[in-house]
Length: 198
Image (tube, rainbow, N blue to C red):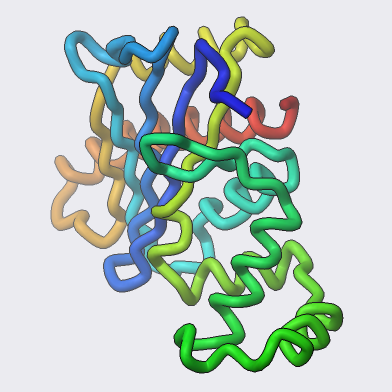
């Protein structure tokens, strides 16, 4: 299956050490980048959290997996269905290396009892920072033109936002933080709506 001709690609990540969530968003039409802000092909929207459990990146990514919107991040991008993601999650969360894989019969038996709830997937994603970096969420622009236009109009205002509550030292920074947080929240809300309605 090929990527939609006109699509948004969203790379979702959460850095556990710095407690920073990020969304990198790009737009392609017929294989060519369409600038999201002036001459920039990608916008980056980040938020630092005092409590890492407050971030919504894992919820958003888990919802995208359940909706079939997750694709591999490689030259020949492939759609990842829920069962494939379940298999990847099982292998990566159960075995530390290929050398630890048991014989095929034992592997099949262990997989047959593996349950991947949304909560379980979120816990797995929280433990393995690099898992989400291997994928991106693909939104078909043609299927939700109005909502996509709302998001692109918003991104056209800023190509980079960092709202980090851990970096506020004075009142001036508090004002910047409040403004950046409002912008980040709008981006995240629109992404959630696009994924939910897909």
